[in-house]
Amino acid sequence: MRLMSLVLFLTFVLLAFSAGHILAGLAEGESRDQKMWVREGSSAVLPCHLSPRKTRKSLKQLPDKISVQWKRHGGSVHQESHGVLEVGYSGLQKTALLMKPRVSLQDSALHNGNFSLRIDPVRSEDAGLYEARVEYNSEVHSCHVELGVITVTLSPPNPVEENEPLLMSCNSSYQASLVEICWFHNGHLGPTSRTFCSLSGALSILRPAMSDAGSWRCQLRYSDNEIISATYNLQILGFDGPTNPVVYAAAGSAAHLPCSLSYLPSSFQMNMVTAHWSHLAGGHLQDWDIFPNLSNRSFPLHLPVVGPRDAGQYRCAVSVGHKTISREVTLAVVTVTPSIQGPVSEGSRLLLICSLTHSRGHERFQWKHLGSVPTKSKLAVATLQNLEGSSAQMGPILKIPKVSQKDTGTWECSVYGPEGQLGGVEYKLQITSAQVSSPPAMFSGQVTFGLTLTLFLLLAVCVVALALQKRAQTPAFSALEGMIGVPGPRKSMKENQKGKIQQTEC
Image (cartoon, rainbow, N blue to C red; front, side, top):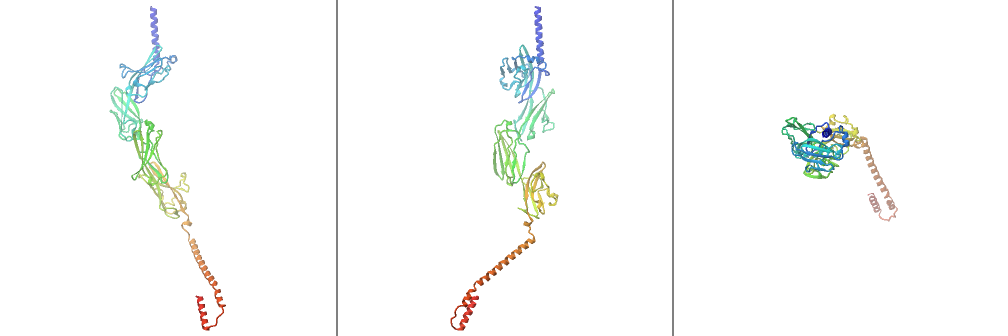
């Protein structure tokens, strides 16, 4: 009897030692009562696994039939527990109705020794103490993980429209007294104040811009010096680029007006996106409709040829779901007006005036001579001999006091701003040759001599024609002289002959 009691005692001691040895392998390097903080809406993995290093032999000997049960005790172990997930020996899985399908085991192959619980997404009511009970053969092991939830509230909800007031607040399930909350944007203190820390913890931005988007971290400090934090990705529905963009285009060239969203429409979980362009010119509204793809966030407007009449303000309105945002884009057209229209005579005085519609006041102008071939890589600044001082190269007006053949070709007027070159326009200068534009005195004398000679020849032709006509009339008088005379008074005959002669002469 004593021997049997001794055997039973040794057996229980051995079992306890073996169980303690395997239990020590649970979550090596970590406390069995672990604590973790997770932001509401994100995923959490509650760890529970056997140590591969200490229980390598045990891992190989783990049976296929393993039972895992996860329970939640609320804020304390003594509170009533609630079933979360259970996997029986047969592999049948049971999940709490309120947490289905948000919970699952991290590793479906339980014989690998990983019994961690995954919750995705985490809700505020998921906070509490979780216990895992693992059974295989005659062994029973457990893990305890305390899950704390940090809640970041955004009003209005994500995404926030650009320039729409927003309010962010942060709190947690921790029971101690809150001392202060600090907000950090992309690793730095918030833009509202250099030290944005307060007891209420609310972050208010009256006119949020695209620069306010990105990662925000709220840090909570409690009376027992417990510090917890959570990050939140703030999305602002707006446009890329400057607030009031200006596009500079040369008259006669094409123009591209930008309209690009800050995020892809698919990231907002929206399935309906439309873009609408309109041009307000003198009260007359011209509309263009664009129906984009959800995988594209850029909806530019292409104008093949622009002129001064096309300049002005254009409006791009994009509707994402039930929200519509708009941005105005200004088209500024650059033109060159010469003081002489058409080809310019050599030696003339020429002015080239570079004008800009919708100037903002800070633009600068610069003239460059590109030569006969407009190659950007071979720019040549106009020589000072042809310009009235070096100041003529800068400014909207280019003065050429005496045009020469070396001024022919393409001239470029570039518009510059604080951010660099904004745009430009080219003007092709054509100069007429010296023979055509200014004939010499010798050439004028030759023309006069030719005209005089022509008149003389015409006069000579007229004289010759009259002489030939007289000669053709001479035979009529010879016939009269050969006629037979009739006797009559001599005086009368002489008078008749005399009258005939006079009549012929007339």
